[in-house]
Image (cartoon, rainbow, N blue to C red; front, side):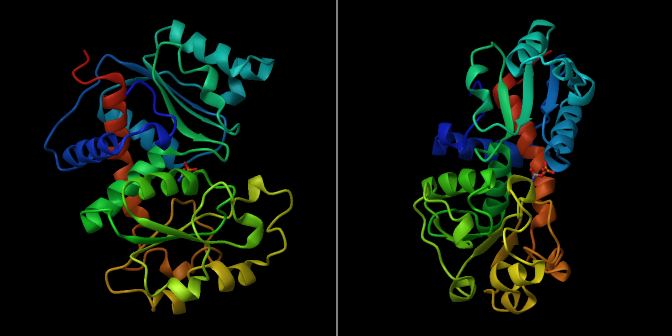
Length: 295
Ligand code: CP
């Protein structure tokens, strides 16, 4: 695996191997090191979880970080993404982690000679989020096949929905969607459901953030409470979940919109478990792309 830019590039075997590797790191069955390797994290869009958990993963692997901030870089002088990445490769970076608001931003970067790890491209893909979600699901159920999963919310603008729909379907899960008509996405062929019709049948309810920054105007016609009642995880819906069902959300969470404030840390919520797993999963992605045993 040289680059990781889309879940569509990973085989089922590669997905399973990454989850297995991350689990070994989590359980202290292996102590990997990328000592002597340099990496830069280029975040052209805001991030807390992805940026900080990549940084944590890199510290745990004993890597050296080359700091890069868009606000103080030559991007402000008009330097292109390609020239920025070629510069970092030329001065000695061994890999780049990039988040960018342009879908498929990575197309010109795949052959620059060092791994490109996509930390989210516009409404395209978010492969490490998908992989950490898969790791969390596997920890819970020990399988993917025939799990019933509903993905709820802003499907059209969500790179998490796109990445997870592809990977979960490839792994044999049954995925359906809940979304207002304006946020449905015809490029994915899953069926759209009414949340109240499926809430007591699913194994996993996967909530998505309403992506205000990708909308032209606010909630596009929804008041916060109206959205919550029609499409969100209310306490009444939570109480109808099967005993074994879990709740996931990539976060950040709009409390009281996608999920009731009181449910973010409820017993069935795996939201913080997802974040914890993200560190180990990103360690696995780094060792698989850059190479183990580097010195
Ligand atoms: N889930 C996720 O990508 O969160 P951040 O935007 O905070 O990185």
